[in-house]
Image (tube, rainbow, N blue to C red):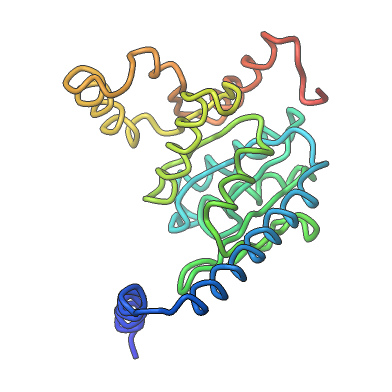
Length: 243
């Protein structure tokens, strides 16, 4: 069976399951065990990450190949972050995530991987510290860990998952649920269309976000610029990565 047919079959089974009638005992049993599983993932994450120190979460596509310029940039960004005193947190998989962990590992820095169980795509890369690899079933638990233990966010080009992580961080900062940590988007050409849409549609046409929300992130092109944004942010508070 081809990968495409496997995915179609999996999706069909999920849809059928959603429409299946369940009695109260089935619902109670299934949901109760899910709660315990969710709790165990939170506990495991909290225990392993509580003492990792200042880190920056690096987001980006799992599909970016090692010979792609964005892979090289992500690797260099992460190496520079370690040299400036930060650890690196990624989604633990291939592509940009691998580049982030590889860059951190090259400088003997803390290399954290928050892996996710997916049917066909995700596998953890080899550059994660063994004691800092955590595998999740639930995306929302994983996103809590990305945000809770990061002092900044570097967002490389990516797909739906990267956009999800970016807007999660922006939303939490905009609504004051977390501090105003620096968010750096790397790749001006890649991000220009999205930024234009936010300005033209969300702000000017629909008034769905405020003009000052554009100040919640910075767009750069080079690893040096990306790390400088994070360093400058903390220097204004007289803080260093040892805080």
